[in-house]
Amino acid sequence: MIYNRKAYPLLVEFLKKAIAPNGTIFLAKHTNLHAPAFFEELTKYFKFKHTVQEVRSGDETQQISLYAVRLKDEAKESNCRNSVRFE
Image (cartoon, rainbow, N blue to C red; front, side, top):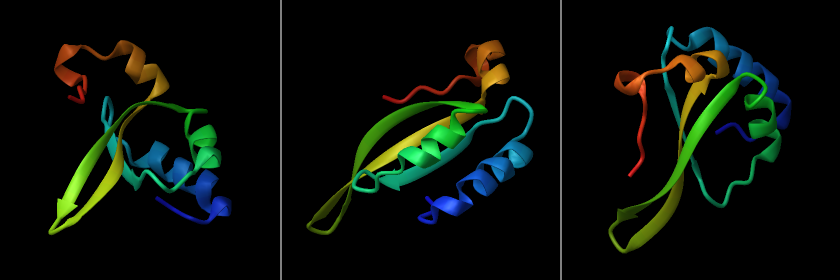
């Protein structure tokens, strides 16, 4: 996740150009990082599914938000083969 708010529109524009047709982009961020401005920019063009997972390293546990991101038009047209399910 990018911390500089001024970069959010550039990042979203990059994601629009980088995503493959009917593709999915996976993003992750620490749950303590609040980025509503990024997601506001992202949802102009994309839909996403979200889940929170715990990641452990030694005695330390972190909560990580995972996002599966698709273009809005393609998310409507997706079929079972291309769908992402978080469990």
